[in-house]
Image (cartoon, rainbow, N blue to C red; front, side, top):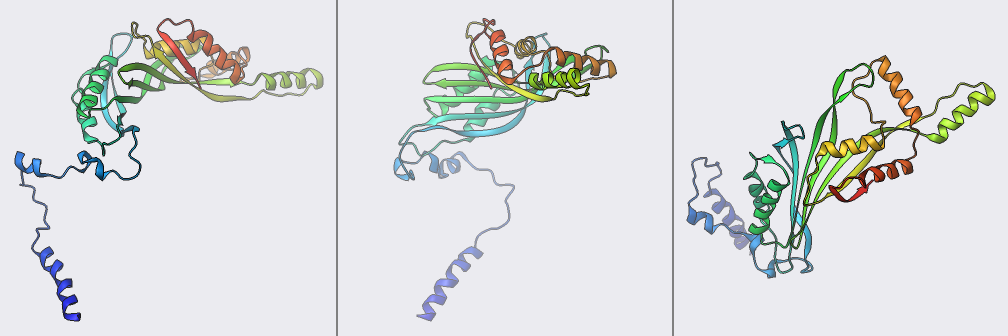
Length: 288
């Protein structure tokens, strides 16, 4: 018994010794060799683990590359962009080759991006993977020049933006998400501060906080909508956007602007709603 076990123990060691353990940088796979490689994700349904159910979204998240975008004034910006691509996976399919999503997207990496280019990339990997539904999200920080209130200085304001294309069974939705950061002076705190001043001669200052509104706009397919348009809609609704370049005169102006626009978050949501409803390029929206 012991001799037999010893022999069994020796056998894999001898086989392992026969294998090469140095990386062969000169090896070039042939077409025949590539065809011989196992592909478990495209295997039969019998390989599925767990319930044989449809999965709504499976894909690759947050792969990054520099993308060229045309801006409203006609110029172009090169911006690092994080891309998430996903497709639906039908029951009876083991999985997908996720690299196909990246490869399909990289075919358009040198293009100037807009929703038409995003649609072309989505068409490619949806077809390659034979999926019913698909989605692309492109996340980046979009710079816009912003003037100071009184000193006429300029600086860059950055907006977190997501361009999203959703395909549900051939029905497509184009969505732009923009984060708008603004200062909100509490109306209650303002009234209480004024009460302390007038009733007791007590100096008091109202509190303000930095607030973020996430605007998600569903775009009318027959019209265009720029990121800059959404920012201007936000500024028209709530003018107390955080400042970039600030001298003393700007600091004073911002204090006056906040005092002229005290706002609860409920007020802000309704003010954004009022302005978004005026835009014909937007068919639906959400404010968070």
